[in-house]
Image 1: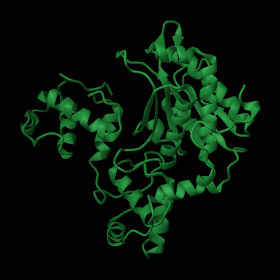
Image 2: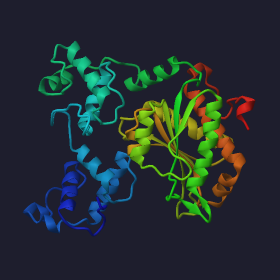
Image 3: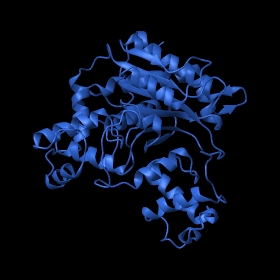
Image 4: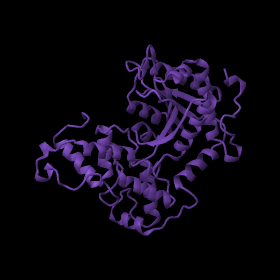
Length: 380
């Protein structure tokens, strides 16, 4: 859809108003659409402010506009558990806040419902069927009135932390510290006819492809099976990159980007993982985002901008822990000089390798950030 923005009018704007009102972000039905005049509904300053607030809370890019991602998130936010029947549809997966509530509830009761991502996929169906079978319900994988009642009546069983974090962390550590046979997808952003951010003849697409190739070499030397989502002259869509990682049945997914901003003060390294900001998140993704960012900062001296939860589809729709790593600002002279230095890009590649290795280590064997000793053959 064409993004809706300040000054736009029409039925689509009225629909956005309805979604924002249902969430308490706009006052009650006192606009022209209350009288049926949908064509005159206006995207005014109050609407833009409400959209920005919604985007911030939901982990979306905050621009005050309603594009596909924000519009879909508004629709998903309207649903509460028991508002509708929930089931797995492979062609058109059910998405919404009610699915998040269901997934969280199943995890709290000790059932593995897959990532808490608000998408009713096959893992959620398996967890739901197991719950229904154990509690004497019809094990049909459909969350209807009887299942809703059972979920409300039962207390939480898993204690000692977030259930998904406990399960995922244990799974990674129990699988052993080695990287042999691990499947890791490295995604250099942009490419082909899309250069990404640019500074003169320097392009984001070229730099992150070089960085991805360095990471690929180091991970492969450590025994991992590594896939790049694109070649030098290709630019897959976000959906194609996501599907590629899912089809590869990857253990980890790392997406590499560079940033740019009009502000002369914007610089540093940030990382992003799937999370709504209100509890639902990729727990291992969050851990990996923190490890990768801190390792890059420790080895390059770049500014630390932290790790942040986002609900971008690239993070949400991958079925493995996924991290987007923004490795600096091409628009900042210091960051740009560092990024153009091949030695710094090699240090970044070593940092990602260290972060991947640390992710599989038990807590008592995990070295401090920046101290992981890489084999001599991986430092070139």
